[in-house]
Image (cartoon, rainbow, N blue to C red; front, side, top):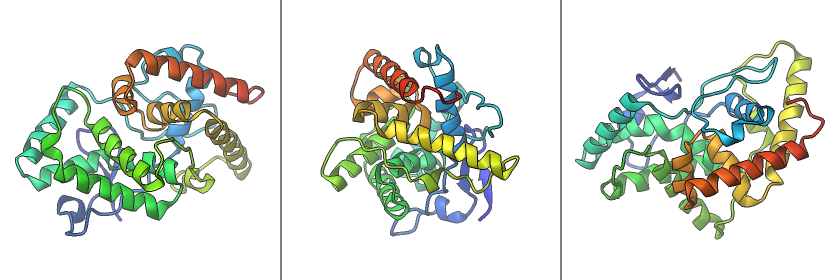
Length: 261
């Protein structure tokens, strides 16, 4: 499968095939497997920076020494937001190709969120496809308020997961194997092993957080959503999300004491 970046968008990978532009009757093409390297590096960078948990995370921070930074969702600038708004307007007018382009931009964000909830790739693919099918049917109900539509897509996925597990409680369930970026090289086998062990400790620490804190970390760092979008998904005020993020990062620092940040 040929992989190319979305033109004019924040760095992300999409399948360069007609399947996404022309959704099949039964659903959309399977989402591209997202990379975890830059997402995990963003968490490590926030933990290493005492001020990071008080600031907006809008761009990927450099990872720790020896790590490999990569593509990740970033808060979109005014031009990209205008492009997304235009696609939304076209999709609401019945333009399926415009909706398929929205799918291209946001599928990896939704898929990673679902994957950390269910830790089952096949189920994550099914729920991601169902998310966008439901979104396409309900696109008329979306009201543009100058905010990234990512929060709307993630909220739909969140509700589908809650229906599936019969519980709204967030569970951080990402499998270790899903963090291993087969498309990225490391300097040496020893470095790779140490990096994986370090990442496994981080994932374990996130899993041990309270459900609200784990979901906040997932949305803010693993998904890279803005403070406003995270607040929208969680149904909280931005101030409450700031405090939740602060408590979560402090809890992670305490758990990971002794680990090189």
